[in-house]
Image 1 (cartoon, rainbow, N blue to C red):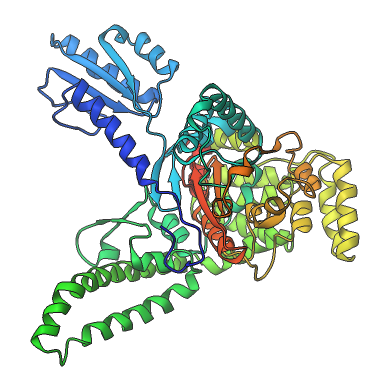
Image 2 (cartoon, helix red, strand yellow):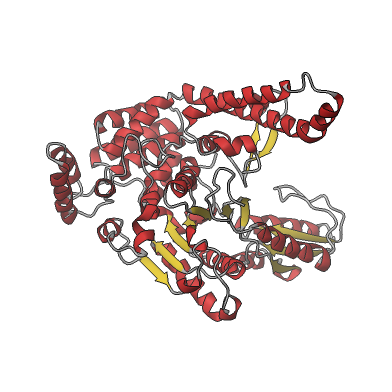
Length: 581
């Protein structure tokens, strides 16, 4: 189904098929093979089941294997004999079997796989729900999940036809693409002769654009995620939102009519919309006055239930907005946004650094302080040694020396680095470029780029005009996400990275930008307006919102999103942190 306000949009694929496939496979695994009659949540406590068979449905994680081993060994000590089955989702890893062997229970358990790798969160959003992907690959260099991504892409091409045009940027994207292509070659008959339903696919690495993910989100859905944490497409609203003594779990997707209309709106516009919505609802309720019996009967049977549901959702979203406003006012959100914008533009860096120092000294939030330090580091191509040592010392003194390993992780991931001798030229470059025209500033930027190895945010921002007061793309206040520039026509119109060679080089992705156009003759004009964007390492709701907006503005296109997990700046910092909350 297309969005209601997009009559010009191409029809989206029916992703409910993925749910049905996963459900049928799980029912077979649980009921047909193992006769499961009761389910328990895997928690760090003894299993209170009297059953003679235990079946564990788990992610392939070491801690889960330790937990299972503790239960099996506890049964052994108690002299109890049971059958044990471990079902791994989305796939089984050798490392998990090694742990079971080390714990002495490998011979006592049997293992199976449930290949559930794609969870439809909305009509245009699929998630693999692998939040560990970001840390495993971009910090530890662990490539085990790349096969899972390739299998997911292979499943999509099997169900919805081959992808005529493939593009990618990043080392991980290239590896996933190559492995996926091998799977396609091995099972070529499955997609042969099928007409494609999706015309383009982009594979994008998270580390190509850290800046967008580190910026504060300003669209409603992003702020709900930052404030309440959206998990698997749903959110728990507490008593402060529900105006009762109970919490309520709410599913956030296109079926929620109120949420659907405000999810991509800048937060400053949301209250006005909700106020108008409340007036419209009241007007519909007031229509009951003056109705005869037949009209009242029709109203009650056809409209009243929908109005009550909409009224309930409206109350929840008004409560959520009020809660967000209280928290953001307390945090002085406007001053925070002002500081972020200064960092993006490269102005008032001293004042911005002082703001971060004050943020640390006031112990506002260890995660928020890390985020601001990382944003400063990436936009300035690393911190000058004096600032790096000063901020690091203040942070450790404020939040504790146990965060020392976190700094090492951030350095390894390229999120928080110290400038080398050659990199300090960027400060000179920044000052000189303010005194000359934009054209001359670009030449100065290129000159300094050749002298020092750098993250190149400033140079990329100038070339693509990413920083603006009012941009065509919403999502990050005054900043156009890098992906929006790529997908807004530069790559799609040229059907290649041609013309972006310099940008690709500045992104340090010269060897990892690729295109593949092999099956376009079978693609319909409708399918070529559908673009699947695959985020490896996670994407934010701000990026999704920006691309939805872009689809409306540019050639009546529709974007579909597949991500390893939905993320935000706090989740990225938590993934890097060695101090668990």
